[in-house]
Length: 183
Ligand SMILES: CC(C)(COP(=O)(O)OP(=O)(O)OC[C@H]1O[C@@H](n2cnc3c(N)ncnc32)[C@H](O)[C@@H]1OP(=O)(O)O)[C@@H](O)C(=O)NCCC(=O)NCCS
Image (cartoon, protein in one colour):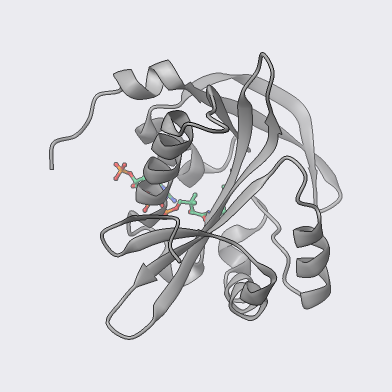
């Protein structure tokens, strides 16, 4: 069942039953994803990745066309922290056939609005850590109203290499004050 939806786009929690569709999509999308992100591309890695469920929420983004739902992408909220922080770190990608069509912007709008509004596990801040050369991801969060907070040198080890990341963030207050485009 869809957990969040708007129009033909929906976000549902990922499960081990999604393995086949997930891996087919990540294998097909390697040249779009790397070197920015390295999602699992084998059943073994998928299972190991999914086993680590602590302090995370993971969603698949689906698009309902006339025939069947298409797996458009993924959004994870990682490193969830409560107490005085109420913070999470976003990870996301679209799958290759769906890039550049506005789906990730729409999916993030839906999820960010939800986690800032919901009654339980409501967050106060979300961050996205982005490699400086990742023009598409920077543009995406900038257009969503995230603020560039600074550069974190050698921040994440991806594919065996410590990589610099820019820290972009948005608070609940920023989000509710952001200008909305009229359709
Ligand atoms: C970054 C990524 C998620 C964007 O997804 P997308 O669905 O193609 O983005 P959208 O179509 O929703 O575009 C959102 C905005 O970003 C802009 N944008 C997206 N990709 C862009 C690119 N490569 N270059 C310039 N602008 C880009 C769009 O023009 C759009 O601008 P708008 O708000 O003015 O309309 C996708 O390119 C991707 O999966 N990249 C590889 C994985 C990755 O980098 N993940 C993030 C790691 S931090």
